[in-house]
Amino acid sequence: DAESKDTLRINETVFSPSPYKNGLHDFALAVSGAHQQPSFPMWVIFNKDHKIVYRQSGLVKAKELGHVLKTLLSEE
Image 1 (tube, rainbow, N blue to C red):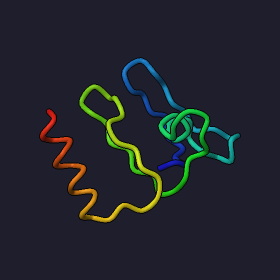
Image 2: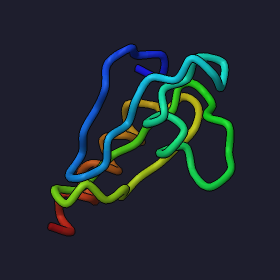
Image 3: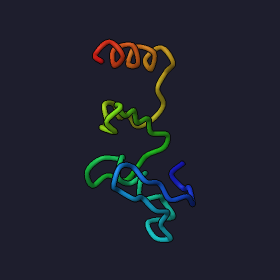
């Protein structure tokens, strides 16, 4: 939730809700990519080490998402 009011901790990094930046959560800004404003919806998939392995802005069709997930699972 890009407008969440919860604080999120991943490993040693703490992401907080921001009263600035149009109310967007720091985590949403961090995963949106370098120097980009997040677009909604945004799909972000992480591996078990919390690294981004897939990022896509906009709608993703179920068939495409299924293909992405199968591909990512086969790479593990």
